[in-house]
Length: 415
Length: 106
View 1 (tube, each protein chain N blue to C red):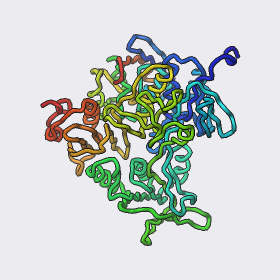
View 2 (view 1 turned 180 degrees about the vertical axis):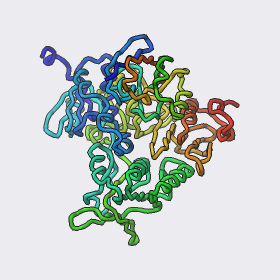
View 3 (view 1 turned 90 degrees about the horizontal axis):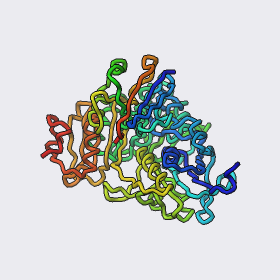
View 4 (view 1 turned 90 degrees about the vertical axis):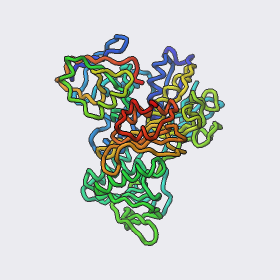
């Protein structure tokens, strides 16, 4: 133990998701040679979450294909993994974190990469057996235990998670019902054109999509197993199990308790610095400035986790590599790849390219006062790739050219 | 196991023994080869795992599907012999393949 006595405590990372894993890689790439300790409350080493509701749920890939780095990576990087360990407090004055099992760990710099957690449904019967959420590998295994042809599944929430799960379940021969409170699926994030398209696709696959339905409770049997979903007015949807996908919440409480500024996520600057000079935050848990959109964002995406992980590693080693990106996302359902660039919030015009009523590929461009701010591209990589660049440039585009399929996407911005 | 060589833009070479069935992208990211970002983890959603495949190897790979083809068409550094590493499954037929990385993936 040549260096332990005099060496500084090093960098502690709370959380073991995509941002945390990226930070370890990037810290070593930035030349940081001190100790790194990664503390995660799940049993598994860092893994990718996007496949959980897609290929991993479908059983097409195993854990070896979703884990981010092989186990030997952490050993080679001299990174101590403390898995199955929850941090219960940060003492910003003493510069320590305390774990659930009573360990106190000192840090020189701290990275909070605690991610987000599912929003829970707070109705009678919420704790019945067979009511599931989908956020972790463990959740997927529980859901898969119900995957038997003909089993009746009710999905609460017609967002991306709900619809991705519906697509996988349908392929496995389940009887699938999706209940959505709004009058259309994906209402929070896409134009009605895109909602209608996905409702048509799921209906054609045999998924029963019910909009304008608000769940008021779950029904159970004597053994405490869920048997139905109560939608009020005496309407019950019988089921064998339930998956609830009604959004996620940032894990910002630890930061807040430590006196760090929190407002819809942990408030950071463009270099992931929090209000404490030795504490940084990255990923889903942050509220961060975005230069492209000139406002603060809280994003739920892999891209955000990766890029902020890189920025945090740079910042913790004294370098400014500001995070400034056009957000992008994707969703796989059936043979449809939806690629999203930008944020459509506040759009004044939606322009469609292609025919979503008859085809399985099209794009919807979102313009705000003529400037492209987002795109939803279904099986349309050119529209996605080109839009990502044009959004960054704040390009003002002619809607007629965007809609004109005879004009190549590479030419669409030309006058 | 199949021997695969990744060549950084600088010319630095990395030769790996890769388990058959993995993709070139997975092999590279698990081994921390610089120059393959693979932000989406292999969903063919981001085009940040582009490699250049020499002509004599191109014929041994499965053809590009339209998704990969059009993604590549819009990548900044793409060329005639570009492929997305996440779409190339490693098999014994690729023993000894050498692929080159672009200057950057963005």
